[in-house]
Image (cartoon, rainbow, N blue to C red):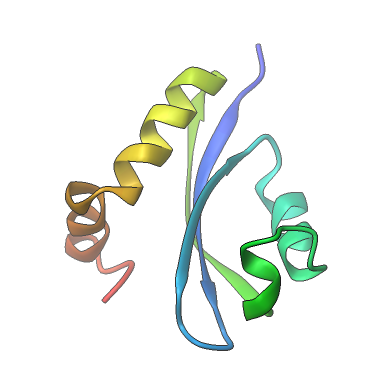
Length: 83
């Protein structure tokens, strides 16, 4: 069984956040910083500020959608992860 993680990265360029999912978060962060993602390439460099192992892809996708929602952003704020 593959274990996906959900992650939050922050741009050191402008402070924006990006939520995603990956099998290997560190490898995915390298891809973001190499400009291989259309959305994130304009805001390089990125740093990892949060990740959690979720499990299989459908669960990870569900958690990713939650963290992108208002409720998920409020969760991240309460945890002190984002402002």
